[in-house]
Length: 224
Image (cartoon, rainbow, N blue to C red; front, side, top):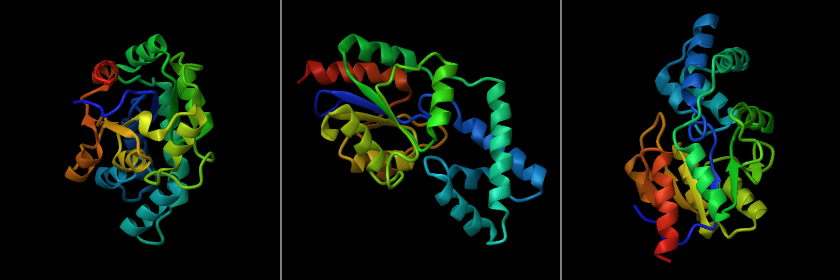
């Protein structure tokens, strides 16, 4: 695994990359659907990862019919998700080690997420990470959501770094599409979904965890 250029900034996705939230979202939506007595499958839920609610609502209606109570399910889903968060929000392996390396090398970094600022602030505070990211780009900060490049382009603009010199870290298929279309060096760190042939073609590398990424960052500067 190698990168084409020295890493001058890093843009992180959040859910499923920094925090082990996707499995909680999955458990919560299945519980909510059972509670409401409506259909929902793991396979349909997996199509929601990395996309905003408006798109996921449409997927629900496409899968289960126009009369499906999507808004009612969303409220119950989020209520159960918050209950699961109370039991503990796990940090993904390698987050702290990578942030420490970026601090050591003076490399700026941002988050580009489809979640809200409130959700990002909550998750970061839960692990003492508030202030370790230079910028948080969240829902409402860009016009078009992932897989459009807007979230990552906004992050690069706020960091003041050419997107081509940014390393983007993503766990979702639409996140990889977004980062790649922004022109960033993209590394996928799979969580619940494995990369397809298309996605591998958009990535500079596919890592097993964030623990693999410091070596990539170091090597990008060594070989420049």
